[in-house]
Length: 206
Ligand code: VGL
Ligand code: ZN
Image (cartoon, rainbow, N blue to C red):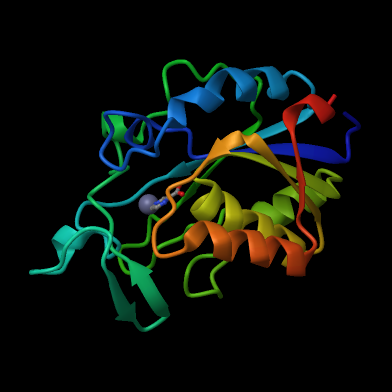
């Protein structure tokens, strides 16, 4: 893969795997494909969901609210999640079987107590950048390939924000798994079509 392409590996962390606090069904199945894909890229970047205890996205921070319900926050509608990816915990660590020592950067996100961040580019207030767009631009990247967890949340928001930031965005579908709550998968697919996010299968990425 030429040097203008980067692979963004989204949130392959213990809490998103079977047995984890916010398990994505069959989330572990993507790991061999992701490890293989990463060998084709000159530039590999990881994202890591990284919440402080008591984060606003946790249902436990809103008395009486259940995980997977939604609430309205100043920046919009927020799905409430089980506590997950708490900074410094085993659940927030990358999966043991993820084997990408060549990754050049880790973008942590969701570390502000009062703001979630599905996207690796822009927090949920839609104003606070993570710095990833600048990092990619300064390294000459024009095309971002994405894989990981979950397709309909962090992969989707990251792909859409990559497009908004002026990058080509290509989602490697079979190297992702979905949560699929409140119609999130359908919404992501429609948003991909209207934003020009391309979908491919991993066989075609060489
Ligand atoms: C994610 C829900 C909450 C994700 C992160 O990585 O897709 N989903 N935090
Ligand atoms: Zn999260």
